[in-house]
Length: 505
Image (cartoon, rainbow, N blue to C red; front, side):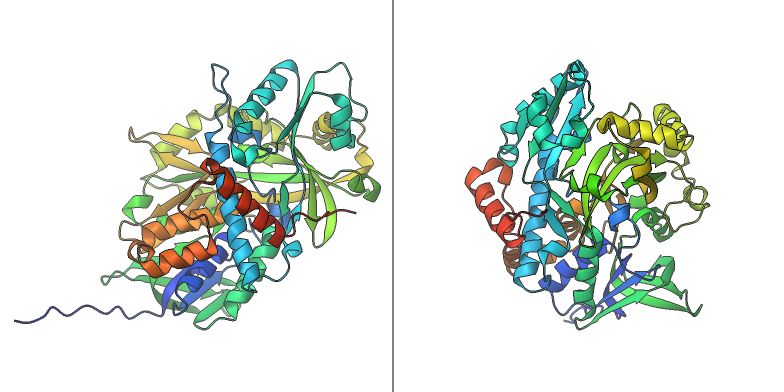
């Protein structure tokens, strides 16, 4: 009896990662730790890693743990506040901190202060309805151990101790409220990403290529993927074969997913939203604010436009930002083309995009108003959070570009979603990450979910299960449901990441 011979797929690489942002860096390190023999090629169209969405000026950097972001706890029509998403995001961020702790223990990352700092997270609101909302949110979250350190106050004197710049010059008769979590962080995802890629580039069977653009993706009969790449320096083109491809190109992922032409990617569209910051230039003012303070978004505003007065540590120096102010551009990347939006419209997604557009009139109106804002208009928004602000102390800084996901509904229509979406082929040979916030902070959880779809057999092996638990000790358990495990995990990661130390002198 003849034995059926197994087909051997000859490829140039086991894995090709498209885009040198936090997602590709995280997936690359995870896979290389799980299987050191994997060959990996990374392609980035710019000349440095993390220059688009992951970079410090292009990313909110909150360490999105849902401590202060009010858009993760929506209020329903009946007045109740839904906290499920906040709890899920907080849990995911704890997973990221565990992975970073492992990388520090292994010497893959050197100094936690180069990418993460302890900065308190606050929510601040005014007006009776908003105060009632924040109090309800606080009461709902406080019962979860991930949020048990949260403080709540309606006392102007106490809030002034927390954030003096926000209280100085404010009308004392106005109802106000704030919550505060001292465990909050500021994360420089640009620095973190570059350090992870620096490690990857030194590993056997890993090649990192900058200034290379992916022109096409084609599925081969043997199940592998042919990638057409152009060297933007020389103009030379080449083809590469890989068993698995990850498209982690930020706003550019949708266009590449469409080129891959997998059935699971049909019907997805994108809605680009640009951003700007006001950056403080007065060192005395910068030194007086030590917090990330988030408020409520305007009606119709996208989540990336939730206003915040934000202490950042960028290149080792304290900075103070306010914003972001939303805008509209047809580019899908900060360094993209104005034809990106038009190029993304296909027969399969035109109906969902039109449907989502008709349902997003408020958002469209809001973006038009934002684009038309004068410097004085922007400054007035800042004064709502910092009444004594002086326009001389602030200048405009261009932020990143985001592409929100438009998802096809079973009815054939579409819905605009604010979040991230993993799209993978049924055979697990290719996957793409679409969307934006809170992507960077939850990158580890997202990439583990992706590996569960695309490396299903490997993820079920004892070796991979054991290694994942070494990297993420709480893997498979819910911190939100285990007080002791949550406390132990936070103590360990806080010590390793130096989050117990006073950051700002």
